[in-house]
Figure: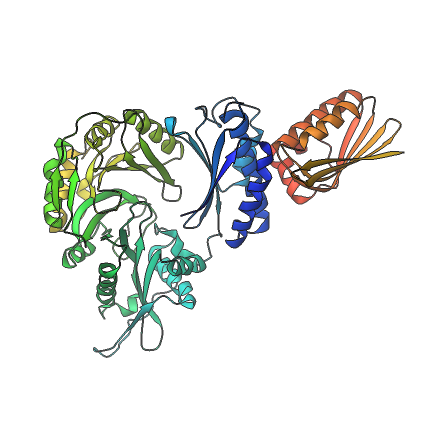
Length: 473
Length: 113
């Protein structure tokens, strides 16, 4: 979430005022003073990069400094649309500034976006990962059959126990890491970013949890997840009750157009649950989770694990006007038919704008990258290549691509992505910005489809994806 | 001993002072505030003028709160100059500034006490 954006003139005198502003906001987010000093040092180096090398020497040119908080990342983004170049790779100066930035930040990401300019992301983590220890499993709890579990929105004092339950179940491999930080998790609930429901036993003990998290890059969509039920309480249908409540909430929420879930593809039960609750199989995120995930359904370490994408739309009355690539038209239309959402097919006239608008982001902990393409221009092939280089440099093992099907350049973008090794994995419909075709690229690995355990509702999609993966085995 | 004080004034606020003490071929500079892109020019000017014919230079960083790469470059310039004509020492470095010296490898090329 972007908190603030400052439009800055290319003068060195602007460094200190910008640092003062960052200090104020970082204080609000309880970043320790020492870390704020370190961040500010990087801010000066990044701003000087732009003023001295990124822009021409003419006065009166501007660049932006934005402050974002994404989960547990406090991210200062210095954005300019100056002379194309790479502050790390190119020989601008003695590299002292870059060396300082690399040492004082938790992450330094420099994105060269071609005609769209350049972004220097100066990232500090808001807190260190809390220390949890895996607890012993408790004996199954014998309660009366008609026992009532209280289901209520998360209370502040409960957040720490939810974090522990998630840790007991998933270790530190859960994708949405906010849950491990009780204070930030509760804050996210207070801000309305997460709707978290807790089930407590009659003795007050927390028995289970499930949440709907609004997706930042797919506005209008929420993801049902962070689901856990303590093993001792597993025969009381707690997850079913929580799921019903989350569905009820999501359907009524004005800002949620669809609910999505990511059932694991190494055990059929969560895929079957999708079917039961009316979530339509729309896609697959292959090799999505890190190798150390061990939970109820899997004890196989050292391999990346895959999930499906199930979507339940709440706004079915609209007609979705899409540009679908020919090769996958039939498969996509089949998905929309199941979603019960009407599609108007458009023909691309090949007249695209000059420039594309794409977002590339990486998750270092999970070693995955995402490329989200919202506007497709004539330069799309070049942009995709550059984004892949950036994400490879950040050691991503898998890259997920999202192509906006509302854009007439979608078919061209699909072909350009294929040229670069991506293959079709489904779609992500229903966000306010558009419906997205999803594709994937594995870096130096292939997918063994026989290892997936697929429930009947995901079978069609599985066959399609497997058939389109050029390296499928 | 001659004493003089110089200020860097930006937008109405003083962000670095240099207190200069000279005695014969010795020079002591006490820096106060920030040594950054804006103020490093001021120290560079001192290096180019006050360092002439000095055999001993002492930089007192007791009140220096902030140091960026622009400041480092000037310190390096000063060290190179003094390598030819005498010695330079930096004293009373706080934790924040010391970290910048450490991560850039300057601890090995400067005399920091």
